[in-house]
Image (cartoon, rainbow, N blue to C red; front, top):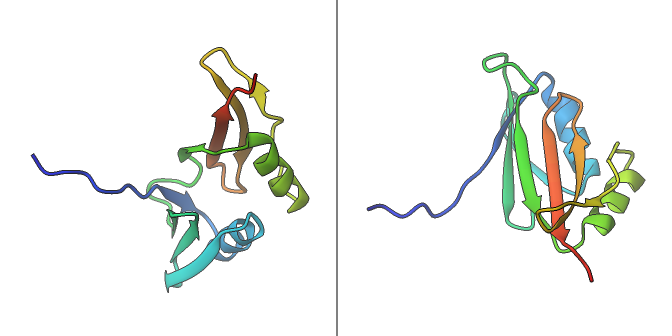
Length: 114
C-alpha cells in the first residue's frame, strides 16, 4: 500500500492579493505560482491559496496542533486578526479559532495544562 507522506490544505480565496497580505501578517512566508495561486508556508506547513470561484471561497477548514494556543492567539491578534480566545475543551485540547477574510477557518489547539 502506498504511504501518504504529506498533506497540503488548499483554501479557495476571492482575492489573491488580500489573502497573501493576510497570511503574511500571520507570520507565513509567501511564494507565488502565478497571479491566481500562492503558497503560504510556516513551520513545515504549506497552505495553498487558490483564487477561484469553483469551489467558492470560504469552505476551508484546517486544524493546527500547536505547542501554545494562547501564544499563537496573541501573535495573530497583534497582527490585527480576529481570534477567538482559546478555551479548555472536554476532549483534552485548549483551542481557539481564526477565520480569514474569505471565510476559511483555522482551528488551533494545544494540550491542556495542569
